[in-house]
Amino acid sequence: MKLLLDGKPVAENIKKNFVKKIEKIKQEKNKVPYLAVLGIKGDKASYTYIKKIEKNCEKYGIKFVLKLASSEEEFVKNFNEIKQNKEITGIMFQEPLTKKISNLINEIPPEKDIEGLSINNMGKLFLGNKNINIPCTSRAVIETLDYYNIDLVGKNVVIVGRSNIVGKALIPQFLNKNATVTICHSKTKNIEEILKMADIIVMAIGKAKFLKKDMIKENAILIDVGINFEDGKMVGDIDFDDVKDKAYAITPVPGGIGVVTNSLLIDNIIKSVI
Ligand code: NAP
Image (cartoon, rainbow, N blue to C red; front, side, top):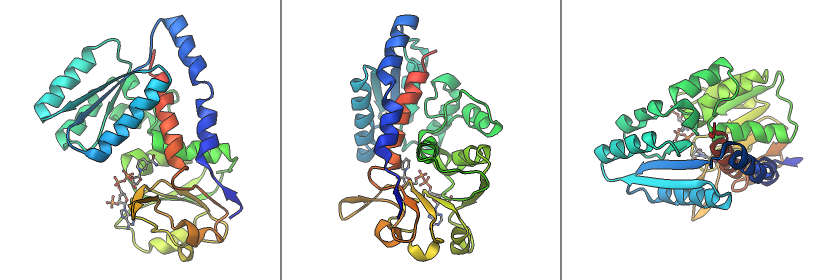
């Protein structure tokens, strides 16, 4: 491996102007960024993630409110209250949610949809509109490649995983940078052949150490979005030790795409003030 695509300097670069931007918003608009997170009680991992977001918000003086419901009805009631609160600038739904509730995301005003997951924001992303909220994890992949000056023009990019937050949201972003994009999923045939042709691989499937050296070509650039736990240790979808001598560049897990994603969420919250 010639280059470790460390996420920390990428995140620091994104965060460096947060304090100034928030001060400017306070002075010029007399407003404070204010995030509301809505979810359903009971999921421990999701609660830990929300608490991390709350801590990050506190650090920058961003107001934060968490509404965890015990039922779908209570969620809808909370959502209606949050929508009417004019002080709240950003709204986020925390998975896991039922399908009925997840669909309510399309009722978040587009500028307050800080995760960029509503039909409105996703549609605009595919049409190439600027100044929209882009799903943070997908944007973290692009910001990382940009930070390390990795040229995407004409490159064969293979994305493994087709979730809205990562795989699908990445398609237009890579196309905009003139890459050639292939997307694979659990029903893809001959995935190893496809992977071997890739200049850049983005793994986002949630399968620990899935990608091995015999699946990649020499000097491939590898982006690991996966977060998995093996014997209590966080690992990605890429078998880092196995591929490291064959790949040109790799994002580590932890310390790669995850830290960049966290900073981009704050960036989207700050931008939500209009
Ligand atoms: P997801 O909704 O769990 O979907 C997984 C995707 O992987 C699906 O498209 C699935 O295909 C595909 N898949 C599963 N097994 C496969 C296989 N053996 N071969 C090829 N494709 C396969 O995905 P997600 O929410 O994007 O999460 C993916 C991973 O990223 C997880 O580990 C998650 O924890 C992590 N994540 C990290 C961040 C971060 O900030 N770093 C943020 C979000 C998520 P089908 O569509 O055919 O089922």
